[in-house]
Image 1 (cartoon, one colour):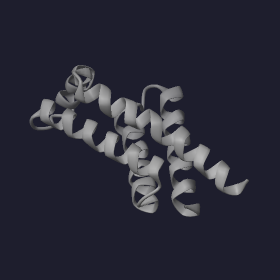
Image 2: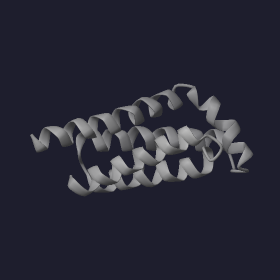
Image 3: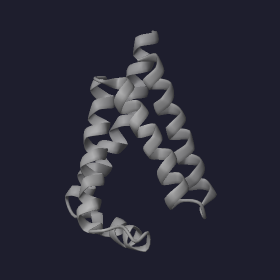
Image 4: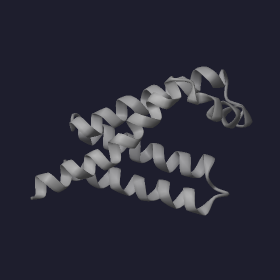
Length: 111
């Protein structure tokens, strides 16, 4: 039962990141580019594609479970960073990112 719950948790946390990564790589980066430009980051379009790659690979790593501690921790930190940088003005989005971070850290710790 314990292993099944961990697998379901990995799927629930990883699948959205796989989908978001694919969306960014298939042209969905257009929404992210203006945000990155407002942050004065260089080459916002290339960075948006890099974000998509990281979300896709990280999500797959969490789903597959290898190396779960690395990908779980990385995506947890990513969720906290995006909550702070991109969602400070939207409490619901901020809290959802904080909750996802907690899930990633928990999955990373229990494997």
